[in-house]
Length: 578
Image (tube, rainbow, N blue to C red; front, side, top):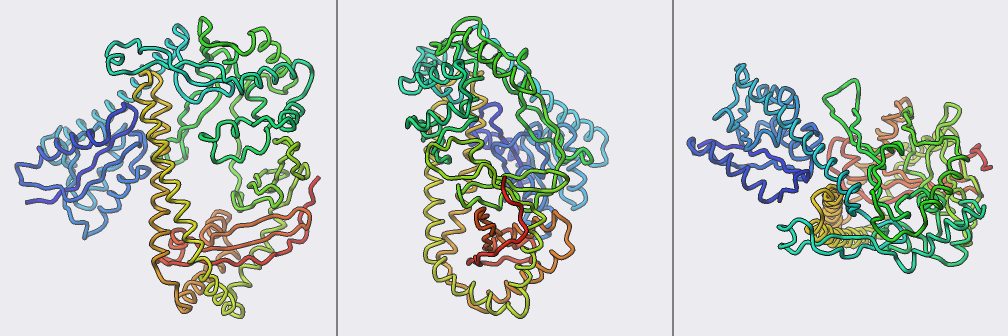
């Protein structure tokens, strides 16, 4: 009897049930190894990941590659039930040499057993299936896009997704596909939201009267009218909804669907190489704007209009006559090494400060008034700004001083005593938050699956993408829940254990002195660095809470630590806001 590992994959591109897909692939694999009395002892099955992703970017496939290098992996061969599901393009030629290197056979039904790395026929067969897999995916994309284009232009059909602000989704009658109609599936249409619809008309009217976007946002906020995120809290729980944003007003003014026409293909998905120097890393998908002549308009009015076509055209003409760029364009920007990206919050509005490259230097900026109306009484300078180069030297000296031999004992004691509060409240809070997020994801998935059952064939792509994204969020939340639960159940670390951790962290800080920008950025992440910039006092409050997983990459072992060092640290010489 031989022990096998099973490898498979199921994406949401063809709307297959992951359980059913896994079962038939596993059944086919078992039929192949049955004559040898083979048994599957490990399973590596990816769900919701495109076949175009390289193996290293699929979680379970990557885990399988890692297992190949382990002499105690528990299996000596890998069986695949459907090569078109697992290999795409030239992936076989990149992956199979790894199997051959570790002496692990790859069994595939199409060759009737193990793939012979020295056989030209086997190599040709597997290459053909990789090409077929790529062609199949391309055909699906063309077929779906053609169907959606026809449904939008000829039928004016609602193709799914969120309704624009000002509209609600309503029942549109039986599905035109008889088989789906028998199953109880219905069409969906847009109807006017009695609360938000008049607000949209007000925005268009005020803009034509000469009011600017910011003035409109201020007026709406001052009058107590809920912003789009506050109006629909179920879909925007991650936003505070405190005020109208200029971007929200502008998005309404440039949305042609308020004319009553269905408009599709305003954006496109484009696959961009992750690294042009290493094509094997594959692509990443980015949304890019299409030129207006690529938009697909319905031939007739598809839903109740909130503004006339003439009104929209006048607004469109005024808006883009004031713009420096009359049409959307793709921007290709350089990649700059922001060391504190995502780690600095503005004390005034509690929002993350954005990064900006200016005069060959990195800056961090918060421009709350540039985006949000101030009628909500939030006091905030127009521009809060500091230069990264003014902060990093002070930050590194503070880290080095905190972990220096002369201060290390005090640091250890502060981390040890901090456990009394973080273990009792911090982990409990993290556990509650993670559990709530898992529940929210379950509820969201239920809604998406219900929508998927009633959606048109051409309108399912966005829903399946949302399902995959929500499932990924749920997986991350479950991981945080397991970590929080296990940490809560674990007794506080002994002071000696924290001393070992701090000693190792001290070695990490030594790296900062001559580290490259990417190494320094990763070190800050491993230490759990968080910063809060106080514009009025020109001070930076700094805290560290070593992260279990990130820190393990640096110290080479698993550790458990919580606590914080949060003394207000003045950062002298920072740029003042203007």
